[in-house]
Amino acid sequence: METPASAGRYRIDRLLGSGAFALVWLGHDAELHAPVAIKILAEHWARREDVRERFVQEARLLRRVDSHRLVQVFDVGELPDGRPYFVMTHADRGTVEDRLAAGPLPLDEALRLAREVALGLGDLHAAGIVHRDVKPSNVLLRSGPGTGDRVMISDLGIARTGDRLSSLTLPAGSPGYMAPEQAVIDGAPDHRADVFGLGALTYHLLTGDPPGEDPPPPGALRPGVPASVDAVVLRALARDRERRWPSAAAFGEALSGTGGEIGTGPPPVSGRVRLTWRRRRILLAASILVLATAAGSGTLLAVDGGSDRTGGRVPGPDSRRLRADRDVPARYRGLIVQAGTWCRLKGLSPALIAAMLKVESDFDPNLSDPAKDEYGIARWTPHVLTVWQPGGWNNPEPRPADITPDLSIPAMGRFLCYWGKDLAKVPGDPALNLAAAYRTSAKRVADAKGPPAKYRAYCAKVGHYIAYYRPSR
Image (cartoon, rainbow, N blue to C red; front, side, top):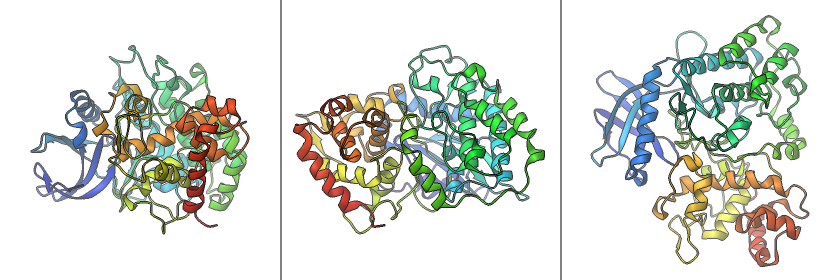
């Protein structure tokens, strides 16, 4: 990928983040002597007028709200090759997802961040906009005066506006944070879907993980969380939206009313304890998975973390999850870790995703098999990939040339997370059951009580490479 030298009057220095539909670059405004983030539509989507319009619409919505609690848009334009771009706030302190990498936050900080996000969502809702993808990677942090970072909501790629809220809605959102109505065709999500996402985000801030279905109170997982905070968060997570807080503002006010009970609190739970809790709840978490579509713009981040960011729960390569001394191409490691940690599901891992890519294409991003109608590194059929791409059916069916690793590898995680719930009771190796489902269907694997005979050789190869790519403990 060639780095453009500039976008209009802005110098481009380096890549900050990439997604299925666009790239975000660190830029420099020479006139104001300030860093900026520049979001540019990916070249292979620039020919699609509907995608271009969705891209530009995101900039319009951010500009319309013009709140310091959202990423702000300063300029728009087109590169010489015709690709649109917009210039926005540079978040030099990364994302809340980055902050959570070490575990749950101190109680005071967790509640402060949650209240700030509630205020930002209130600004969006006042403008008639529903975000629909509230999650840690879409909350950015920028250094500012005083001790607290400025909190900014980003990525309106799948947002809906007042003039579209009554029209047909298609499934969209991110696993673990999306309201139940967002998983239903024509579920007509309104601002209360964002209240659910806000509750899920707050739960993650307090406990170190997003909630599963029927989650226990945060205080059951994090000693020191007051019962009043538990009540506020669990009301936001009600499956029936009529029982949630009526607005983000009401949630924030209720959370503020619990502040008198919060001291410094105990230290965050260690990573080792957190992982133990995750293992105990893997089977429960599998039940929350819904038709997942990450973000209409590929969860692109206007952040500065020193490495490319791909929008999943894990922002980059991690040798603890995937061996670094094997033949996995370095440029795909972050995407593979993202897909392999998309949800907490027995059998799903970066090693499984890497193994499947090895067997499917030997990591060839240009694979083309018209006879089977399969293309790209993960051998997707275009009309099937339509469901699992960011935005799902809200976006057009990709053409074979559009099926890049940025699009197709994360889609593997979404696919496996959704169908994995149907394999929970199937005997045998959960990872190989998932691999077989990818090649045929979850129903056929369940009916055969394991990989059907036709796919056992395929699964044996996947199993060999899982062991090859799995890091030693």
